[in-house]
Image 1 (cartoon, rainbow, N blue to C red):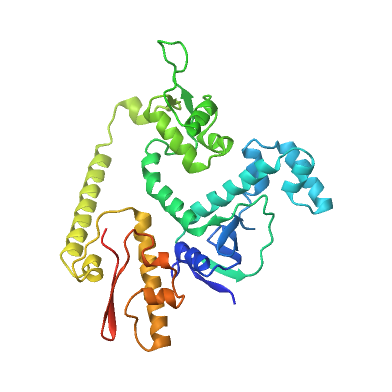
Image 2: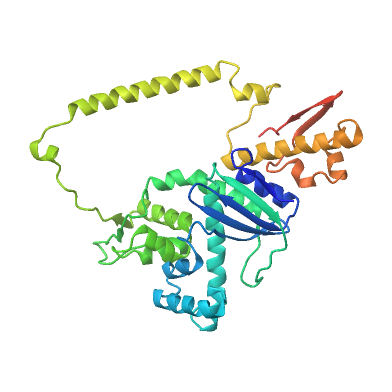
Length: 370
């Protein structure tokens, strides 16, 4: 039976955790307004992820060309061969000695990771999962843990804003800074990734070019660029600015500045009012979720999101236990004994266990103190 619905009702993390928890095999298709993604699972592990038929932009062949692993001419020859043999592009390139299996495996792994990481930002769309046996070449595809992909995805989401301060656009072009005292580029202690990115900077390649040629992925390549900017080893090549009519005449847009300040003050006042209402009224979600005064300490966004999802999973398991046994268990360990949960899920993603106490015909379930 297919699992399907909307992302507004059931988010990406919930779908992945459900498939992982039940160790399902099959194909998950997600469709947004103008894009589609397909993800293959084997026993709850992700074995591949790629853009679907609606999005031709990032297909494997173009990824290989942008990464510098094959030329456009070699790809076109392989596509022509494919029309007659119906072979996969990767197999044709390997048979012709153009691409190694190792490089193809790395490209497929990068495509899978990048595709899943971008899904974390999806909040609208539909999904459909069809349980089935998924055949794949095990020497090319690397099975990946759903938990690992989700944690990495939320880590990237959490760190992106800081990186974007240094690299706000993929169209930017950087050049290496010269050290006048030595007459050559002086590079401090850098990681292998940062050295690789540094060597790719030539004053002509854009950030997007460097991302593809480094084979690091968008996040790691941009993170390396941000570090190189911070240690003052590279600088942006500024595009020449055209003089505007205002700059020619020396006139200043006073009216626009006043309107901007008024709008900004109005916005700040509105936000302040909303925050005041939430904090000092029953709308405060902390008052509803922590009736006993157990307040959470500031922690990483990924743990908060996954913790909320796991809290809901435990509640669901408690209801199943009650339906089967007529009452709630005395402890959460009974859910493990009934194989409704795994032992690690009594604390996932935290170090301490969830707080549970049976209270007559009801129970109290809280996230652990952090």
